[in-house]
Length: 223
Length: 223
DNA sequence: TATTGAGTTTTTGTATACAAACTGTTATAT
DNA sequence: ATATAACAGTTTGTATACAAAAACTCAATA
Image (cartoon, rainbow over the protein chains, first blue to last red):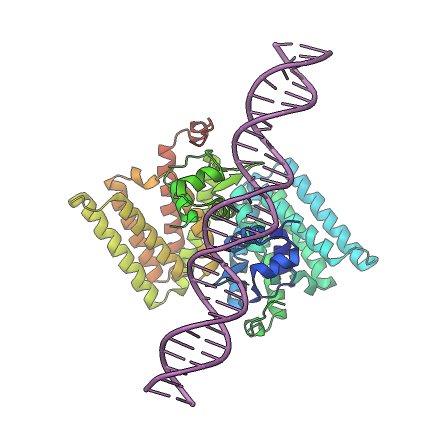
């Protein structure tokens, strides 16, 4: 795995906590490679906004409540637009892709509460694939790439762990509503359903993060 | 100037043409530095989407008509939202900043046609500052950073050069309409005026780039 | 003529060395 | 006790060397 992917994974999964200082040597040692590829990975991650650089070295970016709020607003705007455009531009192939994605999503949720063989990570991944299929159906590559940069914030990335059965089943129903609207080319219905879907996700996140703004106020150092 | 800024500038000003291959050695030689900082700059530029990497080396990204179309749709969506949010959230300070920006813009346009001492580059910069002030007034940092990535692409086509007196004066009036709506906290008026403003900009670009999709079909090599 | 493949050249990827910048500490003077 | 200067330690920034991968050349073969 590349240094970039390793570090990104570690940040998204909370192994590198917000505000944690990351020195090049620490990372080089951890990945058993030299500092050169580490530095290149850090430049990319900084351009993506997952780390912030200071006078000396970088830290894992800490997202405040305000950040999370803004990011959800942005994501709602973009994905809502994507859903409306998908309703307008979707091909038969897109419809099939979205349906297949959501069928898999449904099967995974059923299995999760039935046999427990499916993991929450797999459900998270399938949810992501459905959203991806919708965005692809919008036929706007640039919207796609911007959304993918908005979405990957550590807390949000892991927010599915907080969903209970009721909420997972509900999200499945909303997916179906979105799909139906896209199928019927009902732009506004698709947009509003997507807005509601994402804002509902935000409500869940905020229900669980009562005070992240202070939580990490101490500076976690390396090693 | 950093390698990153140098290369970005060269791309935006057309010195490195679309599809032009950029080898590390060529750039290192041109900037008279070693390949190490070049590589880091290229990683950042790739993350921003200004260059694309292939199996070996990178090329300056070529934007098709479809790209430009999509990018303007995206920018319209984002800046329209920012204008509406600015109408909702603007502080007295923001209002002042926006007014000052637009007054400078007006003075520059007047001077441009009056004495000719002001350059079109300066007008372009002041226009950019006004838009920036509006986006800042929206109080959403994340929207700001996404817009700033969208905005640079049309610069490649130096769209402003083609604005004649009529259009420059018109854009000034639209700015005033946007400002008035933001002042009166009329969200929808602000949003629609911004939409119109940006789509009008797109019309201008498309009027002048009749066939960029073929224009650069040949592969320009380094040196 | 088209194709394969060995050998050559070009270009990237990584490690390492060293200089430069920053940080923290201790000793000295006020 | 506080402030400052010098020094030592840490960490980054850049150059360079070399290995690895890709692209190219051209002759041998079908």
